Every structure is written in structure tokens, then in C-alpha cells.
Image (cartoon, rainbow, N blue to C red; front, side, top):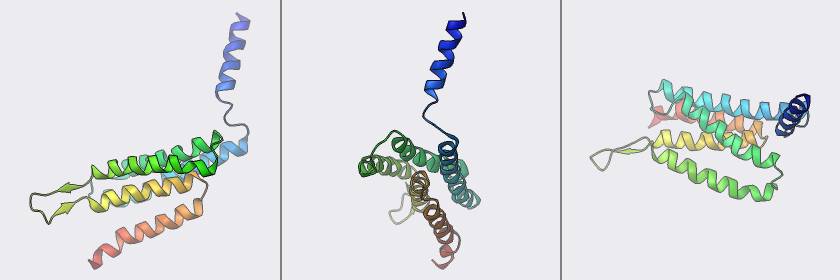
Length: 155
């Protein structure tokens, strides 16, 4: 029986070997947490504005986007080949955003465009965080919040 548990332990250790040291674990944690927090800030603003896609949606989009770029980088995908990952991600987010857009019966009234754009923006912020570009992600979040909070009053 001792050999059985030894094999189980070895298998578990091998399965979790994708994080070789505490430095890499910290990098992963910082990038994913940054995506969740920044996506949450924008999602909170959308939820406070009474929009359908709110806090959880924006947090999940940011986290998923960060994960979609972080995992291939961990797997050794060259940065030059990340363009295919990004293309797929952008197309997928486009479908998600399209679901937030509603056309009213009169042809001039469309709802949800800003929410769709915020979902698209949160995906980009998640990508920036996942690639380790935290400062860029923070700056983009600040700009997004300014646009959503301040500029809507000038329309």
C-alpha cells in the first residue's frame, strides 16, 4: 500500500509542477488578481449605472482574458505566436458583447453599445494584466472609468 500512496503523491506533484517556484506563483497570482480587481472596478461602475452586465460579468471576462494569455505563455508559446490566441479571444469577446446589444423596434434606438464596449475593454485590460503589463492595464482602467463616469454627461 505504501507504493500506491507514493505513486499518488508523485502523480499529484507532477500535475502541479507548472509552477516551479514561489516567484512564478506570485507572478501568476498578481496578474490574475490584477485582472479581477480592474475588471471589477469597471463592472461595479456598470452595475451602479443599472446595466445588465455588471460586476461579476466584467470580473469573469477580465479573468478569462488574462488566463487565456497567461497559460500559453507558461506553456512556452512564443510571444510572436500569441497573435492567434489574441485573435480568437477578440472574436469570442465580440460575440459576448453582441449579446449585450439590443435593437429596439424603432430603428434609431439601440441599447447596450456602451456595455458591449466596456466588455471588450475589460477583455483588453485582462490581456494586458495577463501579459504582465499591469501599469498599462491600470492606466486603461482609469481611462475607461473616466469615459464611463464623466464623459457620458456631455452627450
